[in-house]
Length: 240
Image (tube, rainbow, N blue to C red):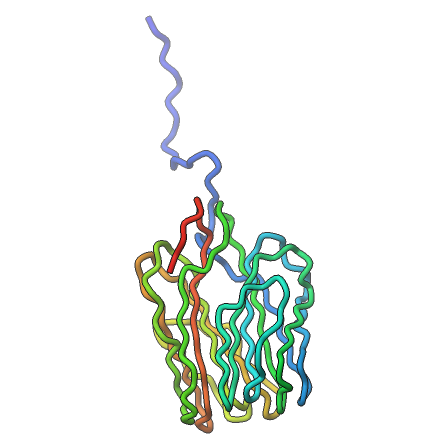
């Protein structure tokens, strides 16, 4: 007669190698920086070096048309260059050495540029990829709200990160909630007259189109905005 084994209590089934905890990309830390007036570079400094393999995303605003961005090793997603304000969007996979991020630009800023760099981690397997992006450059009309544009639908879940650039940070006395549930991550402060950068984020589900809108109180000013969705992908899948 076969011997019966001891009955085990009910336990949740966990796949071998599965990670428990928050799913998807998670914010780790940020670096901010601003340039002097009439400048062509700035430094944004992290408190600690980023972890190799994590995602780094940069948003920068420039006072007037500050020209082409130079940032070695980064993929430039958008350069929204206008008479009044410039907005830049770039990203890379960290190699662990980027304690200081130092973007430079071709045309001297009138009053200065302001930048934000965020680090994101995801324990999932795969390679970081930009799933989709959209942008909406200023038409030189002074406004207090600016939509980011709408991305194509994405093939998987990701983190939506939206940015806005305003001609002068002194125009913004307060930041209202961003559209579509995006949570405020960063709002520029200080630096009279500099191009001001603002950032918000939201987890975006698969098959969704990502879009938000930057809203502020104060004096209407020229504003550009954009959004991107990032995630880790497996198997070299390409996205729009």
